[in-house]
Structure formats: C-alpha cells, structure tokens
Image (cartoon, rainbow, N blue to C red; front, top):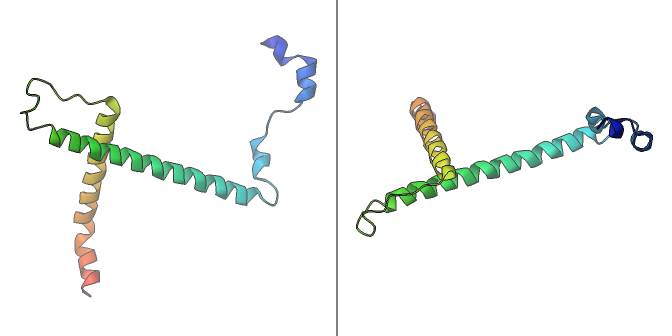
Length: 114
C-alpha cells in the first residue's frame, strides 16, 4: 500500500486529492447542489413509498392467511423486510392518528368558520 501511495507515476497523475468544497463553488455551484438535493429527496420519497406499500401488503398477507382452512398446520412465514415494513407502517399510521386527534378540533373550527 505504501508503494502505491508514494509511487511517482501515480503521484504525477493525481497530485491533489479531490476537494468536494470546490464542487459547490462557481456560477453553477448552488444550482448543482440544489439539483442533487432534489434528486435524493425524490429517491427518499420513493423508498418510503415502497416501504409503506410493502407494509400494507404484509398486513393483507396476514389478514388473508387467518382463515386456517386451507393450510391449518402451516404457520405464516414472513420475511425480515416484511416485518420491518409492517412495524414501520404501524408507526406511520399511529403518528397520523395522533396528529389528527391533536389538530382535528382546530381544523374543524377553521373549516366551519369558528
């Protein structure tokens, strides 16, 4: 590793390491930064959406496997990611219910002009 680090040919090819602070400088720096932030925000939204849909699918899988008539001796098998998605979904739903209970009366007053 040391030989590679101090190799004169490699040092000549790349004399300075990459400085990411320079990436945001210049005329298009702020625009580039905003564009990258928007792209990653979209990725994060899609990831949350996929996680919530998987949670709903897992809940339906549990709900529809309860009849017990088709496979009475076969236990329900859930994958790790399904359990995580279900717990996440339950957390999101409980936070939504909590928010509605906290803000419901004030929203009702605004809607009905009170």
